[in-house]
Length: 150
Image (cartoon, rainbow, N blue to C red):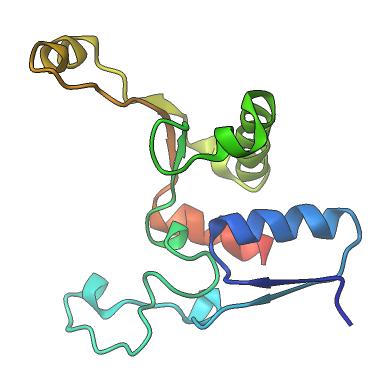
């Protein structure tokens, strides 16, 4: 018997399951994809993709396993801040980064995508630059971290 069942084993589901498990909840995660160690994309080896269910996108870690890029912003990629409030949003981003670092992510520094010169050029064209802080773990490190979280 489980306290919580989560459908989908993407990045947000994994962090939710991790938080619930830390508070002694028994968690079941269901996903149509494969377990982490069985996810291999033939395209990464220069072969043709014949997968019925895409190993890059589905399975434990979801798309986060493929690239391991964590953008710490609300400027794009969702509306979490509007749903939980600014303080909670900032706290949740910090918690995600802390967990990543706890499992090996601290070996990769965060960087900013801010570029003042490009921002000025964009503004002169009537465009708005979106910037963020990023921790780009890459495929290997993100796979290692997700394996530890598994």
